[in-house]
Image (cartoon, rainbow, N blue to C red):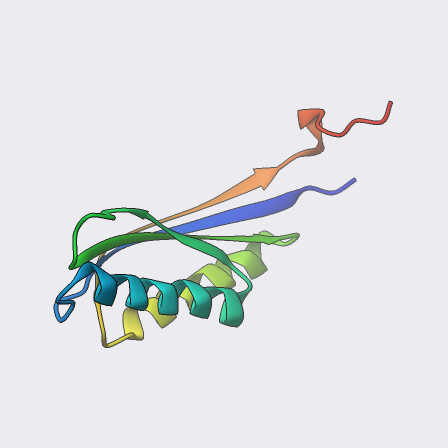
Length: 108
């Protein structure tokens, strides 16, 4: 059996025109839904929930090829940096190989 890969991209966003938490949540929802639609990523706001002009969003992608997954992670980053509503003020990326040796779901 082959291994798969999981990638995580986490960005800290500054939303300078957000005047309320409601405004911020609307933009974060637009971003997370865009990541899901455009890249097939699972995404959520994971920090700074109480701040109206800050958000930390993490997106996860999976794939069977690390090079392809790396290119998708790069595309996610470019897409986020190109958005004019917010500024990306921090970013981290990680790709992890998932082996068959974990024993989860072992049938015998």
